[in-house]
Amino acid sequence: QEDLLVLIATRLTLLEDFVAFGGVCTSWRLAMVTTKKNFSRLPQVPWLMLAEEEDDNSNSNSNSNFRDFYSLTKCKIHRVMLPEASGKRCFSSQGWLLTIGKDEEVNLVHPLSRVQIQLPNLTTVSDLEEMATAAIGTGEMYLTFIQNVVLSCSPSSDNVVVVMVIHGALSKLAFHKTGDDAWTTVETRMAQYLDLVYYEGQFYAVDCRGRVVVCDVNGPCPTIAQIVSMMPNGFVRLIEKLYLVESLGKLLVVSREGIQVRGDDYSYGTTRFQVFELNVNNGNWAEVQSLGDRALFLGYNSSISVQADIGCKANCIYFTDDSCESYLFTTPNGGGKDMGIYNLLDGSIEPHFQGHSFSYVTPPLWVAPSFF
Image 1 (tube, helix red, strand yellow):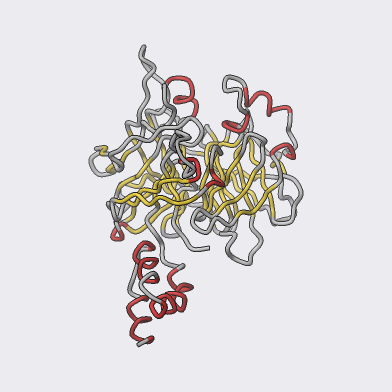
Image 2 (cartoon, one colour):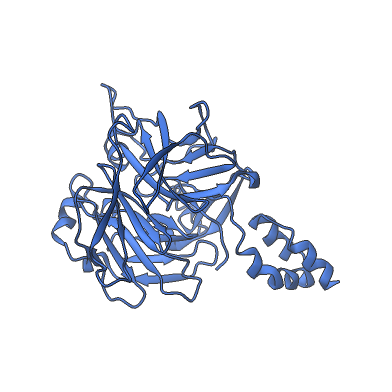
């Protein structure tokens, strides 16, 4: 009976199970469609999008047409038809991919429905003189010009979507709003920006000196960023990489150490994380000793916080290899080596993916699975 099927469907929490439920037969699929809107609100443990496999050109079922996604909850790899990401530089936010091609073409792509939204070409960014600089050493501007991406909301909604990026050799901020023909550069800059987050209706960014700024793109001065606060001296030994993430309504700043190349063998690898809470109202900082039942997911994605009882470990940080400056020039296969699960309690690190996945173009990154 339909009402019974709907009751069962509303108790499913994992996207994989929900999709399988709808694949049983017509009546089960109708029950899935009925409850799909409510299911879409459930937070999902991110999938790990693995690096693109090399194409052997041996058959028409080309590897370049597919991408593999590793599910932590199922310990299973899902192969998805996704030619839109082939050969592209990819980032993720709000369950969507932002892809950049060799022709500087930029698109938003939903990895499961394959819906694609075209954004202005990178050549519309105002500070074009930096593009040549971004290509030095790699020969490919599209690999390094964009360093991070955050969406204000999912393009699946009816709201105006703002895409904010860190870009260029100087790691500036730029954004695009639905309907714009070009990217708009945020003029305020004090040092290289490291990460972004959309928090309480505004974009926040943190730079390499630990300064956090806020940018209200819908306000009267959308290209001006205001300083919120600066990380106090002595909080971290050395700022190598900082992340911003919202967790249970709080703004967290996460410090990552060990990603810079060191030693005669030019090795690198994460050694330590520290977590701090920033009160954006009064500018106060406090170190966070425990994440409680939360887990953080960091890398070439907008940082994610999820409840750990849905398939991942509590009080842990799941990280991927996003140190472009290290892997581009020191590894034979590209990024993908520096990945794991950091336990905030004892500082131990263990792997989250047992296989090998490397790429210079798009190393493994977290993607929150969602419906379009």
